[in-house]
Length: 116
Image (cartoon, rainbow, N blue to C red):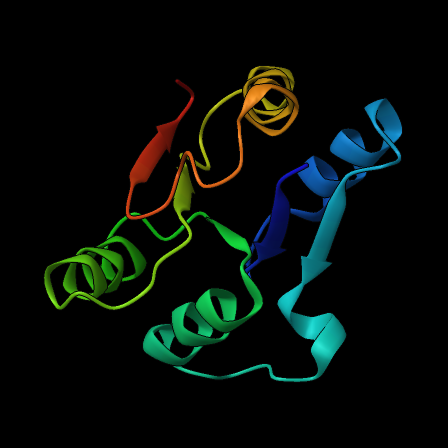
């Protein structure tokens, strides 16, 4: 199953909703590893080293850094850029669909915007 890293500002209600519907999801929050305040490039690098798809609401800079990694040939297990203004249920449904149906490596070097 896909492994996730939620960046520092990712909506905790979405994470709780995901885990309520599938308690086996592997979601690590950036603050859980005690690295708050790091720049986006560091977060993406850490996610790549750990093989975790990044969950973010940062549709500007994080997406830009992800595309830079892809262009530079650096590892990037995937980025799910979630519109923070979207309905929580829709976002949770879409993220569960991705998590439960994706095959290993399917989102590598891809930026996916959610809702789908």
